[in-house]
Image (tube, rainbow, N blue to C red; front, top):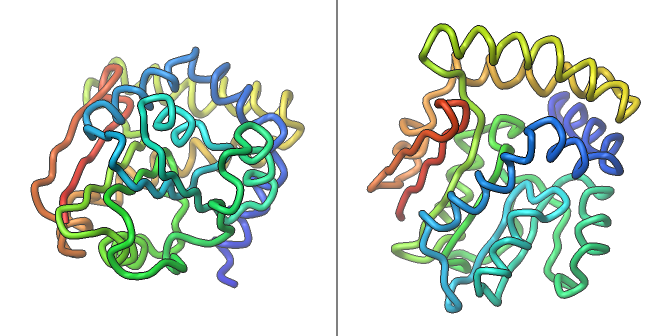
Length: 227
């Protein structure tokens, strides 16, 4: 097991119990809007077969279910997250898998859609993860990625960085009891944004028709790509 895999699994297993509350609280409830917006842009429907990767406690999948998607699978490396997902939505029975994105245990061309919300920066090998997405998607299948980014506006960027580096770790650490987790999470956003070109890596895996949207003062990005 790679060091990053162990670190990420440990973090999310530890904070699982407070994860939903902190997501909503620390994002001022905007996480609900980001998920809904991204899924609407994806054009999911009742015929979609959705795999939600790094699904956590299932908020993306639950929103997709509300939008009419019937066939939904969840994949996450944190057992504690998956347990909470099942508690929230027992309709997932048999459709939750503990796995990393890089080694998805599904047959080729199994899904019409893949979603991953705020999870790709935790992959231990991003290119391998996207290759895995491409393999399990059907022809013309769509992958939707929601991820934080650093805004380009210098004033907004400075406010955002201050919140991410100071307020978020302080509040997240107190409420979750794991300050290290809420130090890692904001640090990973800036490092990821500076060093990773998501569109390029998706293209390297074979994806085309890359659409990119920025939400909430460019603090969140949505990429929608087609196989």
